[in-house]
Length: 297
Length: 338
Image (cartoon, rainbow over all chains, first blue to last red; front, side, top):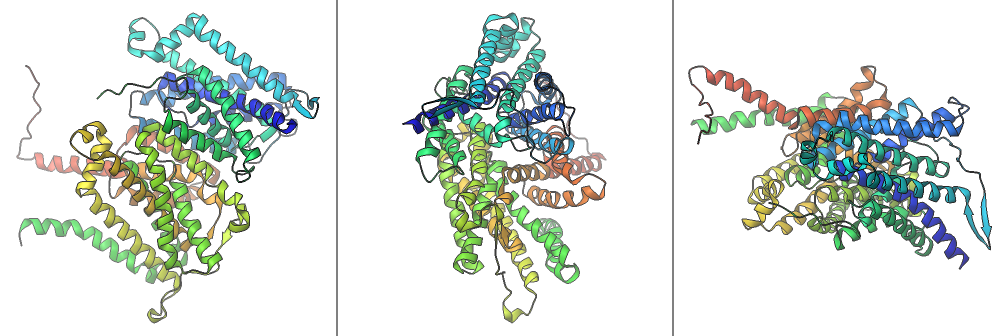
């Protein structure tokens, strides 16, 4: 029983991380209509920036309270610049081209991070105290609690931004109908840049929160990206709320499957993400909260 | 001799010369050159298999590293753990990759475009974990060395390496002919129609589902052949050889050569093997090779969407257009005034 509760807690906390990556993917999908396969690498690069600023041995030894916000701001700028410089020239192009472009970004960012920073695996301290609360055999670490709280706050802020501000109205309008928005005087290009910047920043927050567990390396995000995709598929690719729900569901499925299905064990956990993606796309391709697009010939 | 046969002879000439040169290569080139060309053949068949699916049928795949890995691991396990010969392992490698391809192709009926890319990417990310899970059997992350090599028939009296080279060359040539014939058949026209307008293809009576699953399975089976060739060449397999980055590189090879063309994969394979060899000599840090690849991929998508072969073709067309203009006035497009 205690083991089950422990697995549920770990699954939920991981699930919030997956939900955050999914949220980043969904924001980009809604604004540019493409699946950003480079999302994980953008977050990885930003986490390396935090590591470089904070590390005492190889970096500048700044306090995490400065390094982390700086890394998130960097991530925002990175996303905005990539949208303007790399994605914009292809806007309206065919999906296969955009797919190849995001894969090109994947390769380039991954190699550049290894070249600029290091190909070794590095440690990044947790922004939360170590240890946790023990209640009758079940442990909740402060990192897990902090992760859930931070990501909940981020999700609420994003919701407030989109639903409660004029900028959010512009972002939604530009994503929904770019040409009419342009006629209504909205700077669609700027909205796209902001959308990409926000997505990149959210991805970076997830990466910084997961870094104390998986360490900082050029391939730190491979697994998290796939779980994030699974979460986005479960929730529906055009639903930010669904992304978070999907994240928690995927986290729970992963934790329970690896705990109770002996064949999966620890090495094949990624296979649960694959199975989830496949099943949801087959049974309900629009996800739990998504809308099915109408096909026009 | 009439002009048609003349033209077909002129067309076949570069191919014949190229093939003769390649067949004769073991007598001229050293061991490194031969081994390099063998890697090119492996890459060529791999890119051809991807091109059949993505280039001609429009089904994107980031999962071909997994199909190649299946073929390579099936061969290595059969030869090393069960004492089979390479030749008896070949059908098994093709079958396993093809069956997994068919199973992966069934969801592709309902899943198109980006979603299919996502499913195949998930496959590519999961595959390297499987040998790790089955470490006792596969050697895990350390990989599996195959002691036996593909031996030349004693009657021929040639070195094993030369024999391996000719076998791989022959298989690559066969794969090329097979794909050429398929693309020029009614099947090929159906594939291209589905890529360009899948609803219209359905309307004119093409069995879209059957074609798509068949192409997916066939493409995966050819990728399995590439996996067999990989094990013959390297006599070693490890999970690191079949990561998702391999799939992305194959997509790059396809885009460089020209997707949806027959010669494109050959150019792409040459690119994928020789560019990483040349870049360090130009003073580029080898660590940055993938970055160069990535930037190149983006630039190609923008400036040369037809790849090298498309670029060459339009160059030839432009040059021949200049010569044709002497004397003949080309009809100018007229404005539609109605």
